Image 1 (cartoon, rainbow, N blue to C red):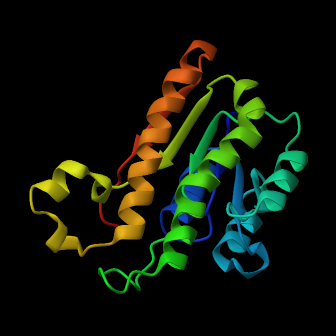
Image 2 (cartoon, rainbow, N blue to C red; image 1 turned 30 degrees about the horizontal axis):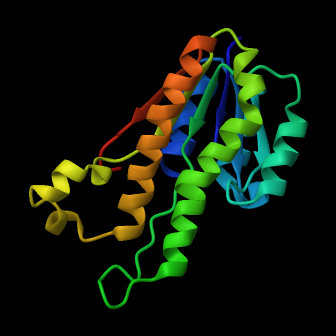
Length: 191
């Protein structure tokens, strides 16, 4: 039975990934910052013995290391980085919320890379060896240069954090390719 680990699995795309993979009989490690408050995850856990819920805050190093210890030696065929932060305030020059920007970078870039590093042995020990992250067309420099900013607002924090993620994953893909680990980005569009 293949294994998938999904970050940010308590709502949106994350909970749907959980439904689909659990229904397809994968062993699912679903993570959430506060699993005790994740009602849908609890309901799915009651229906699927192959679903295991773990606490994970991707912006917290101790939380990441705790998860890595819990999963020590367990192969992860597919690591899905779904956790994300989309700040809504402080999006205009003259009023940029730099604290929100740091939080977006911490979650959308650094958290993804920290979790990847912490679980790389798990992925390498699997049969499939796949890592993916959710990106966004909003991170496209080309779209911004061609006038697409107005349609989605300025969104400095989110856009730049996802652009940085795209570059980091492009580098990671090249670095891990000799080890047989595939690294891809997904843009699901507006959800």
